[in-house]
Image (tube, rainbow, N blue to C red):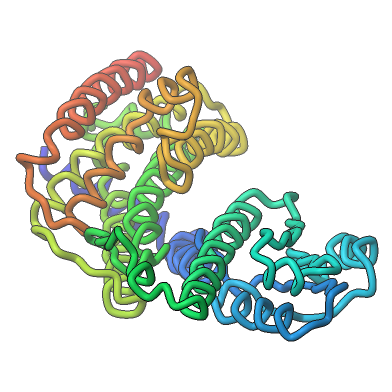
Length: 376
């Protein structure tokens, strides 16, 4: 048995080694995706290009603009003569934000009448517009508070200068709010799902498409030996890619790994069975590698969008949220983030481990039975 089993593993490794283009893609794609998500995907956006329309042109309006720019969220790139010209700059993507200061701004401030400022934001990109809106509100509140303190100070009301509320914030686990600390754990789950599903489906469908599956079946090898012999090399390649991404995330992007490394690999192995089951199921209903690729995309895209990889599940409608709960990646991502970012153990992760284990058992058993039925 061991000899037959090892022969299939050797055969699969030979296929992988000979298909150097696919091997190069599978080995380099996780690293490329990591650098793209690490450097390009930033949920907290700053230095938004801002165009200014200053109808007032006074010292007070200049002080307001300086305070606005000092927040670090806005870069004043140009002055426009009118509001219409500012909107045109936004349409040309020369700016994302327009600040319009009306006439009489300084007079309203001196009289304490509540000076108005209009902030126009490009809403064509949701994340950027939300960041701009939050930053604009915060900048306005800070400027108003500073202005109020100065006004009260000039009137000699010093006992009111101290705020009655001393509000302090403390962000756990990710104080700097770095998006990469969120992306790297998610990338690990995404890589496992993508590569194991694709490689498993391709390796089985390839034999059927080339007509070599029948040749293997007439040999003394048993169906389960054939299946395991074909998936083990792909699992090893995927774990090697995961280790590469994990090391780059920790040592290059400085993402902390606070938890138990052995617990991480053990639960990753559990998630492997979910991905293997999905890959085998895809292989049983696909007759060509092109069909397998299309079905793999259908399986993986909902996992990327509905699992909480980028967008939080709490922000989704109830029906969509329940669809997301039917995906194994939805349970694996909190496990990875809990181990890496929080450093928690199984006593905090079991609510996600149990449904993941149930999903793995059901999908893997169903896929094996379907694969055996297809061979029969």
